[in-house]
Length: 406
Image (cartoon, rainbow, N blue to C red):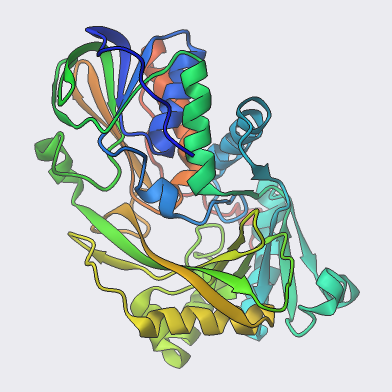
């Protein structure tokens, strides 16, 4: 899908100028339009090609830790469903399946169901026995259990993000694709298309920490996370309709990672599969609307995204997928995912809203869950700017109530 064409020259002024047309930038545009503001979006590429396009398209509610991240995910889910209705983007509400493959992984799901799930209202069910065997005609019966998350959505990012931009253009948003913003200063944007003056400037620059506001962003100690990704075709024609994870993900997602059983699982992985820890690998499988699957992922943190992928990492992920889904897979596409991170991640702030001057703020994700929480974060950010209230701030995940701990 092509980016929406911009009609006419650059406006001399606008209410809100947004830098970046990934999901975070587009969500800010949607929020500003909802508040009745004139919006102009600048994107340096001809189409968005960053984290929003390269990801799985998994909009996970189940994996988010209690507190602001879970709240943002639930709010984002409602926004996606609204966009699906009005903008025609594909947002499949089939949910996700997280499989436990051994006793240690199963213990994490049991603890989650006994404590965190009821305490914080996660919309989930633990499948065992006949329920597990009934999934996909028994294909997953060899696993010990499956946590079914009913609130998780699947989006095909490479189509959903451009489709959202096309719809926003019909709502009056002015787009400048292929336009670099070289500087922002108190509402003045110096761009390759000319100068634009805005009452408010919101920078959603993804993992680019150097082009704009570099001095202020340096204090965040930003990094870049590089991920190896694949698209595969199941050669047996298996028609998967759910996003799939395994117990390995319990050591990565905040809904589980601080549970006592998850810490035991992390120790087991370190001892038995150190290569998984070394490369930050846990299995994610996301079906596309066309019958193939996106598979990943690995995590490599550095100051820049190194261009070289290791075949050994791809092989580990493919083996995990084959073992979990019992399907023969043919690779049809490989690419490198990327997202913004922080030096102390994971665990030290999933996002940041930084005020640069009286008219400029920068909204950044520091984790790979921008698709899951970005829409609601953007709406909270815009509401705070318009209403003059406090900007959204990341807070540490809520802990289990004492009454919920066994």
